[in-house]
Amino acid sequence: MSTIEDISRSFWLLGLNQISGPKLKGIGGWICDENYQIYTPATPTSFELSFTDSGRLLDAFAGDINRIGSASFETVVGIMKSNVLPKSTAWLIIKTYYSAFFSAHAFLRMLGESCTSIEREQANSIGKIAKLFGTLPASPMVGGLYHLCCDMRTNKIVGTGLSGGPHEAFWRMFHDRILQLSNDVLSLSTESLADRQLASAKFSELAANLSFGSAGRGRWLSTVRNAVNYSQKHATWYPYSGEQKYYKQLFEKTAEWTGDPMAIDLTSHQDKDLRRFQATCNFIIAAFRSSACEMARRCSAGRSFHEYGALACLNLANRAS
Image 1 (tube, rainbow, N blue to C red):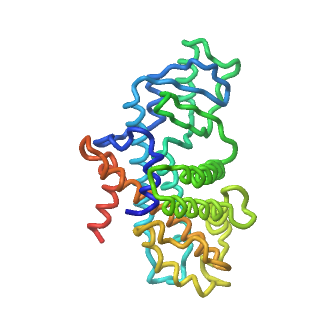
Image 2 (image 1 turned 45 degrees about the horizontal axis):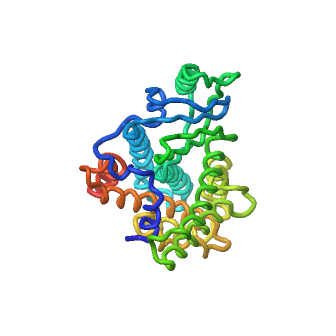
Image 3 (image 1 turned 120 degrees about the horizontal axis):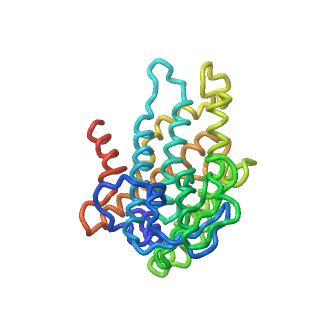
């Protein structure tokens, strides 16, 4: 068992590991079902939903994880070297990025947090319930991206509006949560001091890479992806002018995410930005994969929801390879 999945288990959303069977409806659907109360006055960009049926909300988190986690694995297993253009690394970078983006979303949901788009339908539902409880804001609720944080001990889910685009806002939120996780693991009493220190250091390295160079808080992976995807930089597209010698090693590391995340080197990549990028993405994918496997193993209520989503996708890919 990896230290990462063992440590992360202490921070799972309470009860999520006991959710079994296929789950399709996500958090957005749960909001539209309106099975909650709003006792605290909402604002145009914040709300606090209280609930009594935690099972339905856990199902919704599981539904989102199934959907997003499957997308992550489907993306990463599709990375392959072109026999016609063997120097082409652009799609390796782009697909690795999106797989990590999806895995990071899924991993956060396993911890009870979410970067969720509140659309008109969800905003209308929240407004309807707020009106029933006399907590409707003076101005209409603003749609957009929200940081949702669920606490099963208080039966509340708190939503706070996020600024910026979907990638920028998410990575900023993810970066901050990883930094917090790096600190929180040190206070655990269930793991050895050595394991806590190793996990804390690894999460700290991840946070540092997310803000590498002058990219700003959490934005580095998105910055590299944008440079490759939209500006055809880093010599990843034909005619590959300025290609670095280490680029040929990138395809050798495409399966790195299938191993122990602790074994992925996040720091020894000076002057090898694309390798640092790849290792960081692979670590995120590996952290989600290993944690999903561990959560599925610890489901005593039947077959874990993971086995109908991301892990089912991964098993299908493994059988075909």
